[in-house]
Image (cartoon, rainbow, N blue to C red; front, side, top):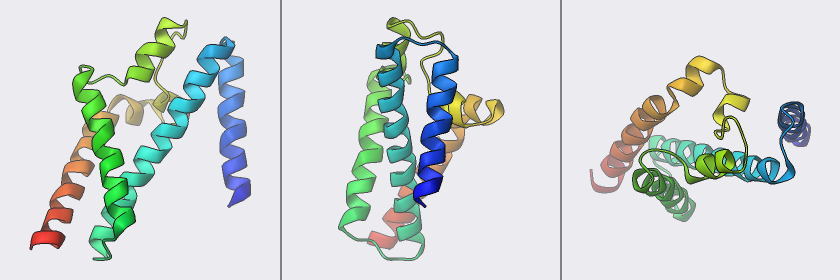
Amino acid sequence: MFTHHLLLVVFFVRNVITIDLNRTVFYIKLIHSLLFFLIVGSTIYVFVTAVINQINTLTWWAFWIAVAELLALILNNWRCPLTDLAEQKGAKVGSVADLFLPKWLSDHLFTIFGVFFVTTCLLLLWRVFG
């Protein structure tokens, strides 16, 4: 498991450095990447715990992490504030999804993840109140 995480970090650093970004943009993209994986992992965790009907305190923490990201996107015209910040600091592309995902998935990430999040919320509601 540790090796897998190390490979992801090496892949990220290699891709960012070859783009020749300044140090500030590098750290913004690093934080952005960590948050991206936290939000994706949180949403998947909520989905899995709802599917197996094992909802617990961590499920609710994960749910509220995903909701906080949703609110940040809504308040920023459906753009992550860190994307804007990275672009203001000189990045040609501020998003991080293109570093880890194929272009077709990166281009449709909001749609796909939006459907997944709504499905997860409905499943969670059904488990809690159904």
